Structure formats: structure tokens, C-alpha cells
Amino acid sequence: MTTTAPQVGGKRKKRGGILGNTGLYIAVSIAALLFLIPFYLILRNALSTDPEITGENWKLLPSFQWSNISELFDDQTVQFGRSLWNSTVVAVLMTLGTLLVCSLAGYGLARIPYRHANKVFYAVLATLMVPTAVTFVPSFVLVSSLGWVDTYRGLIIPGLFSGFTCFLFRQYFLGFPKELEEAARVDGLGYWGAYWRIVVPNSLNFFAAIATITFISGWNAFLWPLVIGQDPSSWTVQIALSSFMTNQTVNFHLIFMATAISILPLVFVFLFLQRWLVQGIAQTGIKG
Amino acid sequence: MSTTTTHGVAQPAAAKASQARPRRGLRGNATLNFWLFTGPFLIGLVIFVFVPIGWSIWLSFFDARYTVTPSHFVGFDNYKQILTNSNFPDSLVTFTLFAAFIVPTTWALSLGLALLVNRLRFMRAFFRSVFFLPTAVSYVAAALIWKMSIFSGVRFGLMNTVLGWFGVENIAYLASPNPPWYWLVILTLRLWIQAGFYMILFLAALQNIPAELYEAAAIDGAKPGWQTFRYITLPQLRATSTAVILLLLIAAYQAFDEFFNIIGTKATWAQTPLMELYKTALGSSQDYGAGSAGAVILSLLICIVTLAQGKIMGFGRGEESK
Image (cartoon, rainbow over the protein chains, first blue to last red):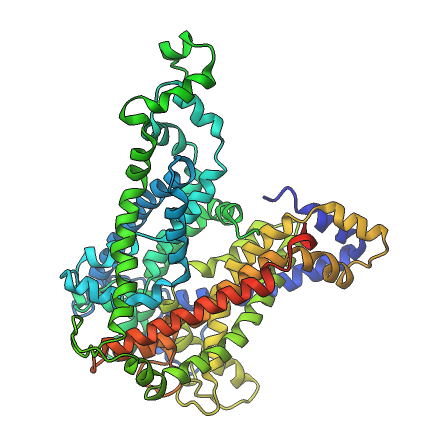
């Protein structure tokens, strides 16, 4: 990714000289600082006491109250551990399910010759026209008539069948080198065998990219868990955070500690898998 | 991988062998395999996407209060009701205005960041990560920070603290709709979360612009900076810009999370279309008919926007960008 860029940058730099370059770094550093402020605030407030947060004078650094963590998890009225667990289960199962179901379908549409494959593909494409958020009313109606309110099933299963993810997989598999599959065929593997032994092991980067996106959106989802999670025991982290905001009984430092804990795993996942994510976005790309 | 079977060895013409193979047995049957691969997805798609859409359209023509299996057909009454007797049309207008602000600003900011990062030679990955990182944060968490820390109306909010250094009185950003400070809160939040993602798209596109174009432009006497940007970079980014604007527009009409958490459903201002639908269908009145009618209208609107924009910006491009 980084190899092609310096050409353009290098050209400009020659004309801009050292002064232009310094200006560039000053501008980009200011922008970066602004973007980091919210992260700073979360950490500062999470490790402060309430009087420090609400105090008259701004305190740049907190007093590092690590005990806020245990206080949060010990608080029985909040049940934060429970909602963390719910979010983990939902995001993990959603990621695995989506990868499995959508990648198989994407491969089938891209590679297996079938007379009506195009018609099926158009039916999938048509669903992209209707944003999923808009259909939450009828989806709720359906899920509640299945008796899935307040269950993991209700939280996870309706979200697995993403036309968009299937579309991304299809586009990706269209570009997968055919020779590899043909070699597998010569070795006597059918479609199924070739898929699992050749195609998937050679596509792990792309799977990682989709997994990251799916995991993040599963963890961060709000509207659907809000509709489905009627009982606090089935709340995800996002619903719990939202309830802290409206409900005045929770202390500032606990709210911010909860926010920090809800964000941290995601930030790590993100930084860790960023390379594949950037590649994936560029590849499937909305390049044109 | 290297395990050549007897077939492969016996028949030197490998291509022929793979041609003949699909006819034999179950594992080679293409039609069966097609359904085996796509079946699970398609079944789910029908149940959880097509059925809800169909059911929604059906419900929108029935008197469906407190019930999802109504029997009283009312024609277009639900549509009339949601378009005249509710706040839904107002919210559509408000959110067209909202889109008119958030779409160009996000577009400009993400393009600007991409141009900046693209010119960096050192610490490029670091800065890219910093701008991209907010993508991982949920709207709920961001809403919490914005509402309770940055734009907290009392003196310990960051914004009021900073303004206080310059002798400005505390501003209650979210307490009342006049003056509409809440837009500042909402817009900055959305910019912060969205910009990095679209920056990545622009970065990828910038790196796909052939360097010869810039060389040719330089030979033809184009000045670096604005002229090159205007006549080379911008036209080359047209396809990406179209996609970005489209995604931003669709996202703006579907805004929910941060409005729900910052403004709340009890306020009379800044209620998004989805919040109105949420209140209509899942609130105390449980009017699934009117809620579904609103959902149908919103979907149609988004479809029209998508198609219109594809027509205006997408198809005109063809030769020019090639």
C-alpha cells in the first residue's frame, strides 16, 4: 500500500521544500490531536474520582483510580459484566455466522455455473436497495412472533444474512485465480473440497477484513439490540451504556470506566487487524 | 497440494480432465453444488429480509394497531396518517437539511485528511491509524463522551472550560433547541466517527491515480497545488466521490444512535425519521400499520436518492475517467 504513494508526495515535496513539509506535519499533527481528544477524555474520566471530573479546575491527568474497575464490576445494580458477556457472544457468533453463510453464497454466485445464477444474484442485489435499519419494524414483528425477543437467537440470526457482505465475497471470488481451483480439480476435489482446502486457506486476508468489519458492527450495533433486548439481562454493552446516560443513579467515574472498557477491546482488535481491513476496503473497493 | 492422483498422471491433458469431471457423481454436479453453497444464505435472506419487507408493505395497508395479523383493510389511510398527522414529514425535511450539512463536510474532511496523509513520508501509518481509529468507536460511546464530557452544559465540560479561559459564559448545548447548539454537538460527533473510514477509501483511490498523469500535467504547464488538484486529482476521484456521497447520504437518513442518546425521544426537536418510526410502531400506540407505511416511504426515498445520484454522477463519467 505504501509503496506507490511517495511518488506523488515526493514530487510535491521537491517544490514545497523543507518549509512545506514542516507545515504539512504541523497541520496533520493538529488534526491528529483533535481526533485523539475524545480518547483522552474517556481515559482521564475513567480513572478519576467524581469530584475530579466535576471539579472547578480542569485536571489534565487523573489520579489513576484503578479501583474504579472493580467497583464497576461489583456494582450489582448495573450488571455490566453480564452485558459485556452478551456483547461478546453476539459479536463473535455474528462474525462466525456471517463469514460462513455469506462466503459460501458469494463463492457459489461467483464460481459455480448454474443457469439461473444471474437471477439469484439480482435478487440478492435488490436487497441492497432497502437499508436494513429501515425494516426494523417488520423484522421485530417477525422475531417476536418466533418468540425470540430477549434471546441470543433474536439478536444474532436476523443479522447474518447481509446481502452486502455476500456481494463483497462474490466480487472477491471473481478475482480469485482460477488456476488454483483447476489444480484442485485435477487432484480430484469437488467444489466443496476445493473451496475448503484451496480457496479459503488462500483468502484468509480477505476473511480477516470482513471479520473485523462484522465484529465491529456487531459489537457497536444499537437499534436492533435496543428493540430486541427488553429485559436488562439480555442487554448488550451499548444498551447498558445508553441506559447509564438516561438513568441518573450511576456515578460519572463508573459511566466513563464502562465506556472505556467497552471501547478498549475494539480498539485493540482494530489496531491489530487494521492492515487487512485497509487492504480489504481498498480491494473490494468502492474503487469504481 | 502435490498429491497427484492417478487420473492426473494417466491423462496428460489436464484441462480436458477437469472439463469431464463435473459430469461425474454428486460432487461434480454444478446445480446441486450451487444450491448447497447458496442455499443457507438464500433461505435466511428470504426469511429475514424478504418476508419482513413483504410483511411491512402488507401491514401498511391495514389497520394494525397492537396487532401484526390485522384483518381490516384501510387502503392508503396509514400513508395519509403518517404524512399528515405525525411528525414524520417534518423529520424527513429536517434530515434532508442535516444531510445537506453532514455530507459535504464529511466529504471535504475525509478528502482533506487523505490528501494530507498521502503526502506524508514518515509516520504515515501512525497518522492514518489515528484518523481511522474512531471508526471502531460506537455511536453510543461517542454520544456519551460528547454529551457528558465535551459538550456538557455545566462548567466542567471541556468546551465550556476552554471557552471559560476566554471569558465566555457557560453554554447549555443540549438543554434547549434555541439557539440550536445541539447541531454542533451532533455534527462534530458524526464527523469524528465517519471521516476516517472515508479517508481510507480516498487514500486507496489516490494511490490508484497513475503518476504519468501528474507528469504529463507538469509538462503541459499545470501548476502544482490547486490547478493539479482541480484538473487531475478531483476528476480522477470522481467514482470514489460518488460512492462516498451516496454512502453518506444513506447513512444520514438512517441516523438514529447518537440522536436517540443525545437528544432523546422525548424532545420535540431533531427527531430522526427512524426515531419517529420507532415511536410510532414500538411506542405506546404500537401502530404497526402507520410505522410500516413510514418505513415504506423512507425506503422508497432512499432508493430514489440512490438511483438519482447514480444517474447524475455515475453514468456521465464513462470516457472521461478512463
